[in-house]
Length: 241
Image (cartoon, rainbow, N blue to C red; front, side):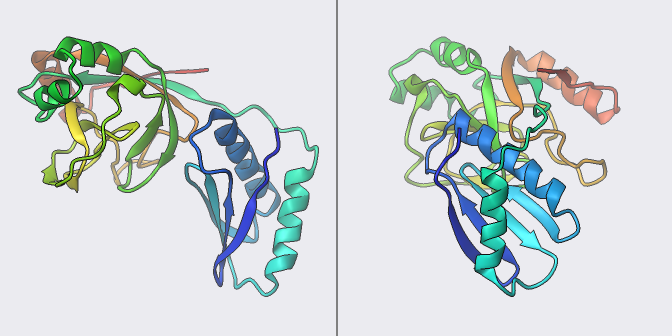
């Protein structure tokens, strides 16, 4: 499925390509395939291609002398019938502790939504989420697929410090804070994993298009996993799909 795309000059060395502004699996698939095409065909000319929810940002090695010429080449590539290999995706099982001892906003969130804590946990762990993009903070996963029963506008007054590993909901999205950070989302759980580490390659093992399932654990299991991670013995579960 092809979409009507918008091409804009982002800087003297960058072009922004935009899809319709919505969270959509078809858009994500189209966007990721186009990203591979661009990287494969312009490997010598491009420094990096960064994907967002509905966009690709292309950084070129040198200044763009003729924007319209570059866009014509990109459009021709997008409209071509080049057969693409299927994107290799992984399904990840991510442990989350939903204890109110660690989940600072869980009780308030359940009250706002007129749900029990158990109902919140059941609704949050039921879907298989899709990673649409990674950003805001290095290793912050933007996940699509949240049950609409859990939609809640962001806090009017953001928290000054949200703890690393906090699993939170803001609007129609859920995500995990990879580092301590200010934030306006409601923290309903805590994940023991590290989502970004500059000392390993790649620093973030997750990719846009990957799938995520949350698995509920108790406080003791959370502490055990943190201990295993500190000793370098914990293996995150994943399978190719």
